[in-house]
Length: 306
Image (tube, rainbow, N blue to C red; front, side, top):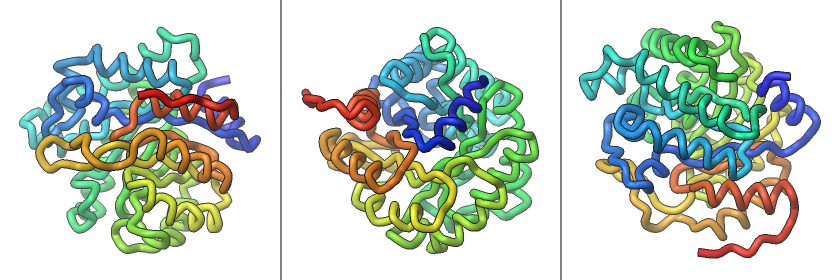
């Protein structure tokens, strides 16, 4: 069986699947500069060994899925850093590092998701480009990720329906499985103001194997989970933010937010509600994933240390 068929079988059988945690904030936490516009993508060139080690640490922590460090490797983002001519190289390196981390581990069945993020700022839905640009630019990135061996396309941190469906369409056209995750404004709406119910319906046409909510504080995630679960026949996933908050220059500041103890407490409730895929977004670390693995999959008590 391929890593994806193993993953899909487990979800179909009602099992809990563990996603990895943050990449961008983890790169920053390990002392690598992650300034905008490229954020974590710059480390692909300057510190590839750090990216590989982060992937490996998440696998060792128990993750069943790792996602490529391609959140800011589309041509638009790279062009802002005057590196648009290197779009192929950035994405090749990102995929290779994920594959090397998997092959060097004992977990060859770990699936690799090819991350595709919004072309503009995740938190500013008003900046989403027109449909033609979405189709062209997401198709280019999806093709590069497929060429370099990802197991599925993961439309992450989507703030509106138009862009989410553009990414899903790009993934389906190249014949790869697709997954999608949304930023939620509240319990009923995604960040654009569109209804969560409408987002689920629009995405269902592309047959994603999971629909998620991500990159929001625990309290916001708490409010929207029931809406996802009550209106979808597709498995639901969650990966919220951990310690810290977004920063315009650095990308992330490790101040405020929710520590690991609080995260685990909320995660238990999400699983009790019926969430099947769980992981961590900005501010989470391999420690979060290791504790999720122990407390949520194995159901064994864990003493959390600093």
